[in-house]
Image (cartoon, rainbow, N blue to C red; front, side, top):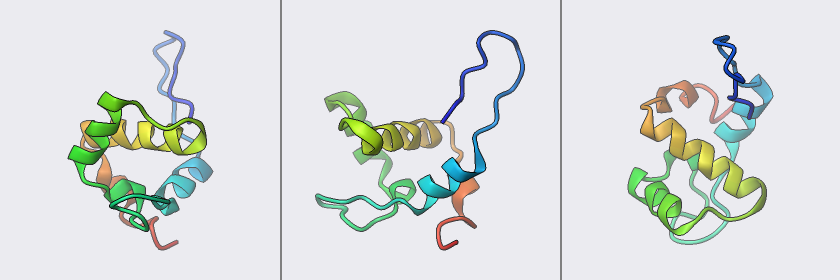
Length: 83
């Protein structure tokens, strides 16, 4: 997900396909296996941010979920989860 604007002051919008993929992604393991990543408890995502996100695509998605939750943007995914 490209959120860098390289200091140009121009807003950068995430790719719709990336948003849809993130909205449909589910936690593959652990206590919250099967739960949508965007529905993970904030405390769990914060725990990952402190302990370290997994490598690869899952880690990238969890990092993005962390930013979404920290900025109160969960509502953006309400209509996309079951799409």
